[in-house]
Image 1 (cartoon, helix red, strand yellow):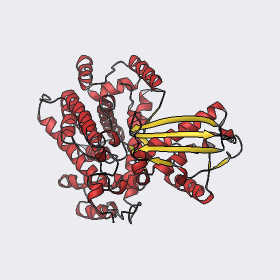
Image 2 (cartoon, rainbow, N blue to C red):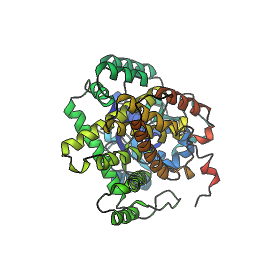
Image 3 (cartoon, one colour):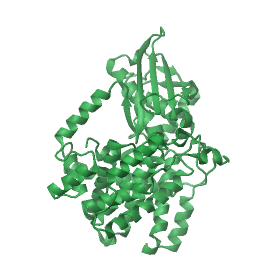
Image 4 (tube, rainbow, N blue to C red):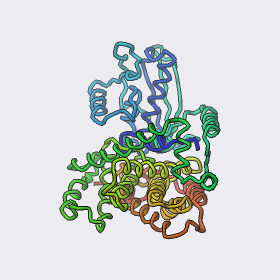
Length: 474
């Protein structure tokens, strides 16, 4: 297990982890490489080529402006939406970007401006590079037109990026990380075996591995920060009215739903848990669709599921209303650690990229992770937690990624609410049993991977099939 909980849960901006956050990180990494070489100030021209799904749905996913921001050195985990808006307005107005400016390329001065904007990005929607369907190539040129640097990156889901030619470095880091951890695992069977031998739960095994890189206080503070950003994301959406950007004129429903639900259920009657879960999931995804600040969990397109199920845990578990702050933070930490342990299995054995395996890799994996997190804090054994994760994914197999207009709005927003409910039901079903079951989580993950491999490309975040072509945009 080389993937950290803080890799799976990262703060970024919407609407997509693989199509917004990943390209911004890749562009920033390219600019950073030139700064490190000391040649950034010699760059006078740029070329950016986007391939496959990035080109096909980049307009609706905010890929193009994300690339521009990354080339200026913006970090998606630090960038605020209003800062992004100001920078993009300046680039649009002047037709120029400040290459690597935020990385110090200009020294004490502003970095030299390069005439480059959204219209200069070259799109290849029908060309898929061998490594992954989310490919992008960056080239920097000097005043003589000579290539200063050229790099190819792939956005492989959840904001993770891989540079072409660096695969050996990634493998070396993986092997080193596995050697350092007390309980390395890449399969559910290995995870359960560690639990049995150590007497730890799934959250405990994940925590022990995290302690290799951070102290416990730092881990718990980081997990609390992730939860706080999730809550702030939800709260922000409850104040924003009107329609979502992008041209579909999808009305923001969260504020009105919140008003009506608060009137009907002012004291959090457990009979209304379903309505609150729907609200939280949809609110987070409305915020994501508008380019707001969200937690990639494990992707942006599925960002509402874990916050919604975590909301259920912090409001409807026995005694939740009387918890101290430390008790609540402990529940949040155990939930996220268990969820992350399951997320590791999807990253290691399959994919969380909608462009690679369809929405089963995004909403399906998030639902599975959320089910595991809830089963953990409900007191489930490791076997019951694994069973909860298995049930949730089993009933998301084959889920296609067919966003109308290439926007993370329809069916994505409602799909998050449905998947959150599936996660809660999966956890409750698992806890009714003793943990034994016919289909293992590993078998379901392998099935998801193979299903994604067999799935037609038009159902993998290309907006070329399904609802994307059968529903008239309005």
